[in-house]
Amino acid sequence: MWAIDWALQRDYQIFSVIASNGKMLPRELSAVVDPVRRGEADYVTGSRFLSGGQSPNLPKFRQLSIPMVGALVNTLYGVHLTDATCGYKAFNLDIIRRANFNWKAPWLDTYGFEYYLYGKVLREPTLRWKEVPITMRYPPRGQRYSKIKPFSGWYALLKPWLIARLDGKGFSAATPVIKTTERDETPRTNGTCLQA
Image (tube, rainbow, N blue to C red):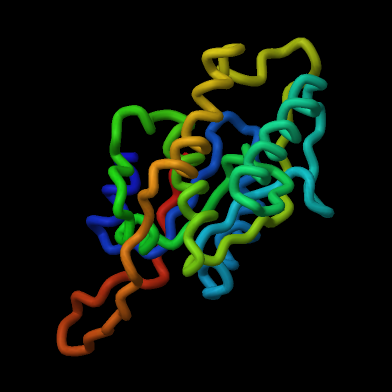
């Protein structure tokens, strides 16, 4: 979350996240960032399961568990997501600037932050969200592909979705951006910060 602070302090407008483990393809970054850059969405996340998405070597357990998490999220939020657990994301940093919740809370460290924020976005009618097809490559069978521990790790993945749905917190109203031309200190409205 320190990377978001860094981007906010430098007036970046778009923040993107990609896994540093090689599962996600950097060449697909524009597909994730461009809808935010063009003003079509405030929050974009990748999907392995949309038409055009891929997940080579996806382990059998994940083939079963990812749709189960998706079904829970879709039921809780009344939406239709195809991939609720994909970490390839981009969002307008105004989302964070408008947050009326503690997005730096210690319990949100690791996976908690991205799922909690995603849940808040899904609950906010003034924010536009979108899924785009991406590729997530998994190592060949028998090689370790995740740091998530059974049971305790699964709870850590589901907890942020539940709390985001039930805690009653959200976002303040959007404020119009006023651009100044008197100084050279105008915000970087097209800057993109990438966290790996």
